[in-house]
Amino acid sequence: ICKLRDIFASPEKFVDQRVCLAGWVHHWRMDGKRLAFLELRDGTGFMQCVLSNELCMTYDALTLCREASVRVWGTVRHDARAKGGLELHADFWELVAPSTPEIEMVLTHESNPDILLNNRHLVIRGRRTSTTLRLRSLITQCFREHYFQRGYVELAPPTIVNTMCEGGSTLFKLDYFGINAYLTQSSQMYLESGIPAVGDCFCVLPSYRAELSDTRRHLAEFHHIEAEMPFITFADLLDAIEDLVCDVIARVLAKAGDLVRDLNPELVVPRRPFRRLTYADAIAYCREHEIYKDEEQKIHFEYGDDIPERPERLMTDQIGEPIFLTHFPVSMKAFYMQPCTDQPDLTESVDLLMPGVGEIVGGSMRIWRYKQLMDAYAREQIDPKPYYWYTDQRKFGSCPHGGYGLGLERFCCYVLGVRHVREVCLYPRYRGRISP
Ligand code: 4AD
Ligand code: MG
Image (cartoon, rainbow, N blue to C red):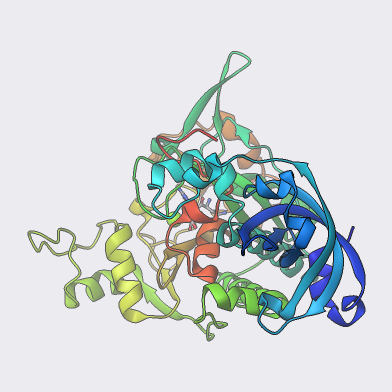
């Protein structure tokens, strides 16, 4: 059995050759009694198969439905009209397993979003969704290649934990053999603990947030690409994030530029260095550009306000290029963030905002002095006990270090020009959805 990927990769080897294809009926159309067109999808590509005469006069042909699985034998031919320039002239085919006409009811354009989400196990077979999933896999591969090429080690921290990283309000609690535990919000702290062992390290793992906000970029379960680096400065951290984003986009374009540009014609590797704004600059920008904390009542942002999703996106879209938003106040950020030496009320923190999506990366330098960390626990009313292993790092050979977390789904939205993070998930998890 030939894979369509291989045929399209080197057509010269296959044209005028007889092959067997196996896959699913993506589309099926009878043209009169003696001619039919079967668009076959095999998971690696699509090809039109032409069935003529007795091949389309059998019982199986007359009752064939979309999504039935089939094997088709025939000769690969050039055809300028066919997608990809090739088609298969079938000389034999067999039904492997039938489908039913019900499929047409589910997979119509008129189906409402809930029906589509309940039937996502069928929707993913569609051209656009299957391509999106394939590209997500490729993007993940590019992240790994980026890290491995730069000598990072991939670690696999647990995702069932008894510490919180990003504040108690979005923790999923669970009963772990009679003990209270959480689904991890971030693997950052475990990566930090790994740097004295392996140096620069990264992970690609799910993180969980009990997010109540129903926005197009929030999920309850998302894939988190996190990295941690010892002996770096804040400037090095920003460089590393720029390098990551630009290098991964360049890799994706090199591997699958045509496929990506079909979905997102505008994608280019962003220009470096990225624009830098401090949190204070961003508040001033919003005040000057009619971006309000409360749009209806035209209430301005004040220093100290959190900039929520919508205004943040408005600002990013107006500016129209990637933005490093830096130096958030201590009071707004997680306990572990390193305060600035010259301005101890600010942190060495960064969010990367991308046009169309908003925040895709959050990172910072980490508090690395023992006493400072103990003070931060106290300030945030965190019981240091379960964090003993995190604290220990500050007792046994501490060093300045920093890292970041990137939301894979948000990154995919940016690269593929997709509006909603749900669309780049196999089966998205968000409040109100647990199946399929
Ligand atoms: O900004 P966050 O909360 O930072 C952290 O978790 C750090 N501990 C990461 C680190 O330094 N290792 O999350 C990082 C990124 C966000 O910028 C966003 O892209 C993504 O994770 N993210 C989400 N993506 C989808 N749905 C959610 N509910 C998300 N929450 C965060
Ligand atoms: Mg964040």
